[in-house]
Image (tube, rainbow, N blue to C red; front, side, top):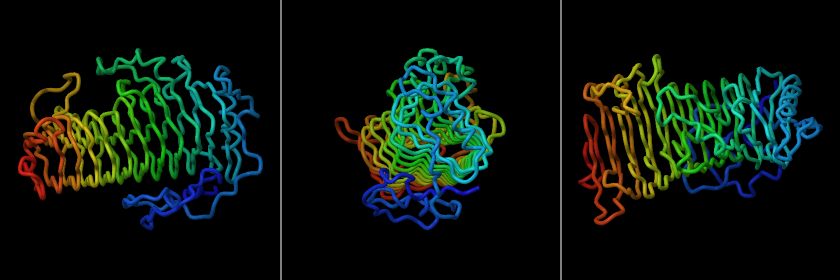
Length: 428
């Protein structure tokens, strides 16, 4: 199988005109052509497959030539599935083209393993039908694929407004889950670059049991009051980088779930939404640890939370959340900028014991500044029986943007140190 080279854009018109980012050696292949930034690029701990640029076949698989119609009304699902089958059964590097137009589809399952590396060039708009009977589970699901890419200027429009009223997850713990827009399951060596995800029915993107994934310069948009429209959720995955994304939704911009290791979130602009979250942890049995997370040079605007770690008070498992670094983050009118909550209990489903089985340790918040629209800039609400350990607050400067600009910190059952903070924030 010919590996995809993750460095260059695969079409000349996508290539930026000015290349000025310096990256660490391991991430050079991923981010070589990112736009110039004054900030340091994220560290990435994985090396992508060796090899030169892929040789794109002379005759890419155009879905229109296979029967798709970009009129926004005709079901184009089968044309896309046919293109995938042809590409997957071939060898070398195969390219699927979705040209400009509006293509209505139902569920699209892109299953591997494949003999080829596959590139999907998305310049049109895919529309997920509002008929929920057309989905088994998700809208677009990529399964068991190695060396895969989606790039272009097009949009995945989940058409969530057609079904959001059927979402009962704000009321019921055991609610029916609506289709996620784009799911990567058991995928290796993948990139999602440049596209827009709009108005998902549930999560916009879900990365599960995958490794070596780059999500670069995507735009994710849904109304601030849309239910459960998380931007990007990561679970049971390793070596995932989210870089240069613009995300505004009705839930977490980025959520990092159990079993996630070596996660990098860099240069993300978040808002509206619930911020950048780790968790919820401890909801289910046998959850795995979350380890080695770095969130750097991000901006959060008008979000209900900023940087949040949350675990269930009455947890059913005992994963660890450890070795996190939050650095160079700007808050603009954020309700709760920094929060660790080991007593998270939505919909009153927990036993209010004050206890937790989820251990939180070695968490650094460094060079965090901006404004809060509530007086409580820092909240460390840790468990009575399992206090947070090794929490560092370093050069945190967050001001209340109301009358007197004075903020406060509330720290319970947390051990660590405060360095370079105003007196009212130095709670450790």
